[in-house]
Structures are given as C-alpha cells and as structure tokens.
Length: 323
Image (cartoon, rainbow, N blue to C red; front, side, top):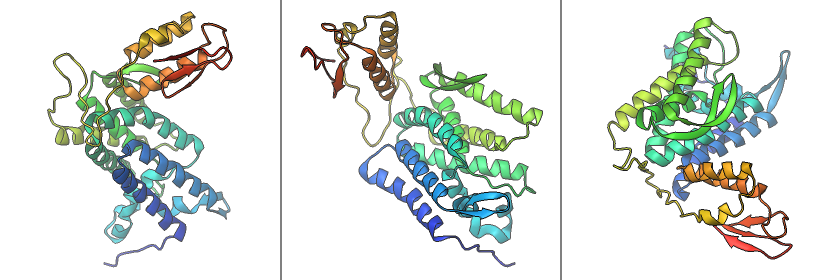
C-alpha cells in the first residue's frame, strides 16, 4: 500500500494558516468564535476569487481544488488528504453560497455560543461539519464531486441548539417558501429546516447542494450536544436562559425604555419597540435598537437624530437623551 500525498499550492497553505490562525487569535483576544469563523470564511473566499486558473470548463479556484474534500479521500491510500475534512468547511463556491451560509450562521451561531461557551461551540461546529461531510461522502462514494462549504457545520449547530435550548426563541431566517427573518422557537426552526432537507433528499432533487451533508451535520450536532452538554441546566426557575460563555458572559445593560418610548411616534416604531422589549438575546436586541433609531426623528424639531454609545442627539436643535 502506498499513501498518496498530493502537493498543494502555496496560496492554499496560506489559506490553511488563516483558517487556524483566526481561531487562535480569537482565543487569545477572547473574541467570539462565531465571529472569528465568519471572518475566516470571508477572507478565504476572497482568496478563492483572486487565485484561479483557466480550464476548458471555465475558471477554477486553486483553493477549491486543493482544500475541498472528495469522497475518494476515504480510501486508505488517500489518508494524507483527510485534512480537507477541516479545510473544506471554509471554502465556498460563490458569493451567494458564502452569504447564505454566513447570514444564517450570524443569527444561530452567536446565540448558541453565548449559551454554551466557546469550547463546546467550536467542538460541536467542527465535528458536526466533519459528520456532514462524511455522511454525504459515504452516500456518494463513487462521486468525484468536491465538497465545500460550512453548511454541514451550521446545521450541526442547529441540531445542538435544538437539543440543549429547544424552547428558546431566536431571530433567524426560516425557509417558509422563501427565507423569512422571524422570531421563532429553536425547535420549530430546526424542524422546518430538517423537513425541507428531508423532502429534497426523498424526492431526489438534483442540484449542486450536498443535502446529505446538511442532514448528517444536523444529526451529528444533536448527538454531540447530547454527549457534551448532557442534561445541563439551561434555565433559571424564572425561565430565564442561562449563559455559559467561559470567556466573558454577556452582562446585558439595563435600557431606559422610557427614553425610547418618547421617540416611538408612529405605529411602526411602537411595534419595533415592543420587539426590542421582548428580545432576550443582547446582540439581536442591539440590532433592533439600531434599526429603531435609524427611523426616529427629534421630538422637538422633527429632524433626523444621531446616536452613538447609547447617546442620542439632534444637531439642529441640540436635543439630547440617553437610553
């Protein structure tokens, strides 16, 4: 038996350093791993656009060829290529592929990491991504398709979230005919995503998406959460979510809603303020506040307001307030 080692381009080595290095920097700087993963995916995607070569079938990125995973790598001779189980999670085939994955991940990933801490989060993310890739590869052993993308890992986070915090409500894109951003219980969102993927697999839709990787990642994430988190306490006796972020648990700052209520002068703003008051996830609440303040006007002169660091002011009449 002779092991096959395929040489890779220098730019692919640089990409691997970026993938691993971003996670190391996040650990040292105590950043959220979810943000670090998004940054790494964006940087690597830029590299895929910059370093391509021409073929009779069009331009192909060097990184996709070097760092994508092929089902054939599961053979004994191809063991040295198993590192692509990791690298393939950072490679995307186009802007829409990247944007779709990172958009969903921004909502679901940050919320889950806040609850379970960075260690459990990154373990589940990476292992679930590998589970997704292996699932698709085992079902398609004879295929020469190159597997790329973070969707298997993202579905793994969904599965783990459904196991550990099924009743929590989060704001996230949900596939209901079209992708709608809505506030929904985690378990309902995951059921919708799982049903969507299962139907596609059952009817045999032929597209370029690795749907078996989605299902494999989802099931893998659920099992990993059962093994790592087990029956960990998730809520207080009052029903409040317990956060286990081992870096720095987010301490939600108290908001003076009376100041914001004075600015809610239209039915739309009043509705947005209700969502802000009901939001339990600090990052989602901050996003809603940002949208709210962008639509408000000065209560004195009706001119647009400026805001920064919880301070609100009007440059025309000098009105000031905080929240």
